[in-house]
Length: 88
Image 1 (cartoon, rainbow, N blue to C red):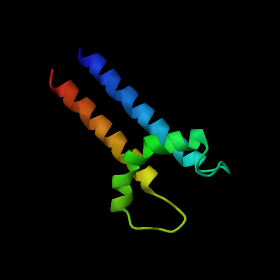
Image 2: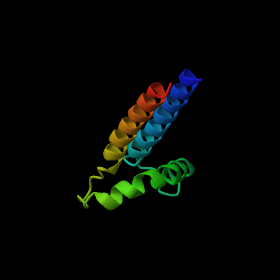
Image 3: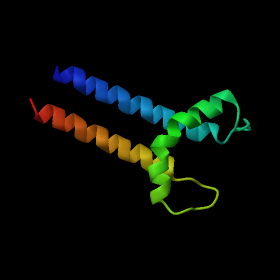
């Protein structure tokens, strides 16, 4: 059971990380904001990024919230995995 839970946590961390990276990369493309791919990625990523955008001060053209979110998600994933392994 423990290995399944660790695998699920790892998969969720990877998927969320890929979502945030894809959203950040697509923001540099010339796709219009209402393009279906860009809109969908933004709708999925925005609830994750919003708390970090509220914490970080505005820096102009560069948004550091995806980088901070990735770091926090990776750390939380490792903490959850350590707790799961310590619990059994």
